[in-house]
Length: 125
Image (cartoon, rainbow, N blue to C red):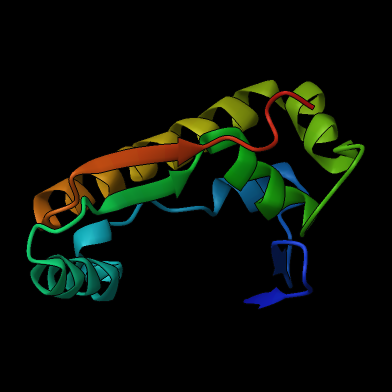
């Protein structure tokens, strides 16, 4: 479950162990996020070419950190613990996240966005 605390998403049940990471599954964005793609199509039609429509997604480290930390973090203690304590699980998790993000961006392009942007707000921290 995701809720909002005012500083980005807040994850009610953050991923904190290797077993948590192993339970993450790939999904097809065209199916599970079809409502977003439908919105893109509707917005694109409404814009009628007047301005470009930009799609977006969070970058793998940013999304992984939110999922692991449970929300905003200054220290990334839980993320670093998983990265350094369970590197193979961390890499599998990030690969899954990156694959889904890639498919989601492709689906947005197929739905009609003119460009996509990846927001990587946490990787430099």
